[in-house]
Amino acid sequence: MILYVETNLILAIAKGQDPEATELLQDSLCESVRIGIPSICYMEALVAFEEDRQRRESFRKTLDQQLSEARRDKTAQGSEVLVSVLNDALVRYSNLLNDVEARFQVAVQAMSNRFEMVHLTPESLVSGLNERFLPEQKQRRDNLVLQCILHHARQHFTEQKVLLTNDAAFWKDEIFGQPNPAKQALLDAGVSQRFTRTKNFLGWLQQELKTE
Image (cartoon, rainbow, N blue to C red):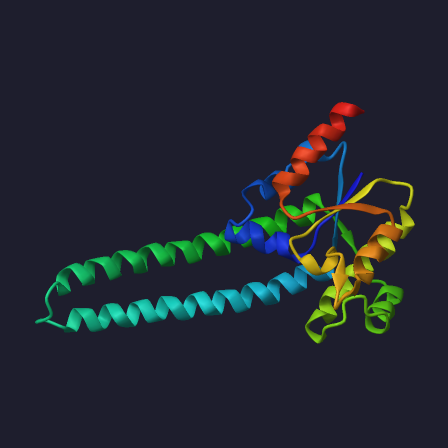
């Protein structure tokens, strides 16, 4: 069996948004599941993570500025309580930033060891630029990710294949009132199911293993 994942899984692990996702980084699934991720997802994740880090750092600086202002105000009622609350929030948020950064690095390193890297071939690159399964301009990178998965899936057509992504564009039934070409392309390549959460995939996998 092949499980395909994409950029959002890396970010979900770093941000703690998919608690069960870390189970995919363990070797206990190696015997029954190959996990493939397009190589370009690592670069996409780095870009997205840096943008998110800058937003979080901007908020941290805002907290710091408000704390400084509260400390200067010697007459406002409850100023000491406000200073204490803001200081505690600043410490906790700074710790959160450090935790997210650490989880991101651990996730990328573990995934590079555990997951199979699906490379962007010249064929996939050209197809991603010319064959737009996902029509919106902002979905250009998603098209390349999709083409990587399709190319790999077609090469392993006889194997059971599923997709883990919370990006609805890959699997929703219709786009602009028409059948979704991305979903149909995945089905045609033998990708039979899509899961939005790791928990759902693991529950399904457990049932599949029981029936073997």
